[in-house]
Image (cartoon, rainbow over all chains, first blue to last red):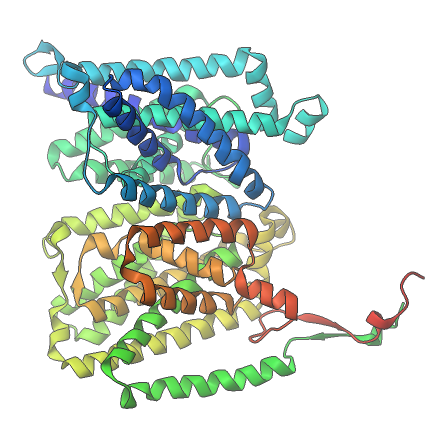
Length: 300
Length: 340
């Protein structure tokens, strides 16, 4: 029963990773940018949720009603103010500028909130610690299950949105070929702005959920970026559900590693990621054109 | 149109020949510094040399080969770790330091096999994962005691004054050799190859450039250089703490110095390192605003001055002190009437 418990916890953790990852892969799919500040946007969202729910004395879930639109606008602004300019300058500039942005966000958060480790767990009552006891060795936490369900809903919703709505089609067309999309009347600038807004709003949601299930501080961002990246690459089969699968594999690897020694939690995740990458290279899948394929069915 | 004889391809200009002599004199002068200067000066110059090494290595990676690594701290840290291992197993301190860096470079070869297949940002974060994994593996070693860290006790065999001077010469020697290596590499056919790869990998490959081999040479050189910087750092601080030695801030510094000075120029990273060193020296301990300012500077330079300060100087005044490229000199064409 213990092994089932272990694997289940890994799967549920994978839901969180998929949530962090989907914005990263959306932005990569549409704009060919890997946003190195992605993880820090998650943490920014978490701090924003903390501030809103603390000052208005409301549940963090209610706070999301304000946080998600704010972060979407923030994403749009980052795209218009910074990424758009960097996109025109080749591959180097987006990486350098988003890396700079990551440092700015981390240190401004530190300036504003200090070094304290925080958590939203006390603000969500028994959701944070309650669980269904299936047997005495097999528990499913309410929050972990909720996060997993949200991940499935969000990934499924995004997938439907991209496939079946006019805006979704415009995004896919722009991802495929922005210049040609312009020819048929799509405003690629607007599409890029919207994609950035969605990406940043989803990662802010992920960050808020991270803050509910664990602790966070101004420098928690880079690790979230790494988790997101590992999930996308592990799952890299070119579909939305691949990201979820990647997150699950990462979560299970970490849970199993931690079973042997708690210090192995992170290391096992990294090693499994590297092993899968190496195996795929040997099998020739990651060829001349790179390993990270977009996981939203907008393969190009 | 003017005749062909009016155009000359040149590498060494008068300015660059003069600067070549100046460089030689400066190197000799710097070598003699520990004989005359105080401890503080020697120590600070050692730090400056470490910065110059780091900036030049990152520039070789990103500015010339297009490899934006966010994981160079992997080599900075692992070199120091192996140096401690060697010294614990009885190798004298300074040979241990160099051997540590050699092992780090040897490790870079297998790492390059799969990392170099990744492109752009995938390579960036992939290298970050490598650095994290190495950091966590080093933490497992009982010798290191997790994040508590350890010290390179063998260094205590030398007096403080001796150590100061040896560290200085080690840093200076490393810097001169590595800058020399980059200079020679960039002037060789490899230099043209990697720049072609940076500008358009597919096009370069179709012209017969051996993409992976060229990138690998730069990658291993940069790994060795960062590891040498790491062991010099270890020799000055004596303590080894995984969190510090494997910290991503090393790469952040490298990026900033190379970016401010001028990516893809030979002189730029040196200028960037000097500026960074002065700023650090003046404001170093002012904390988070300072760090946020560094991030903002990186954004501004990336967006508005992507060629960096030296790139601007070069473009505006046509100065080239250390010629790694060729220039076309037009004698009369400029004065020829426009149009035909």
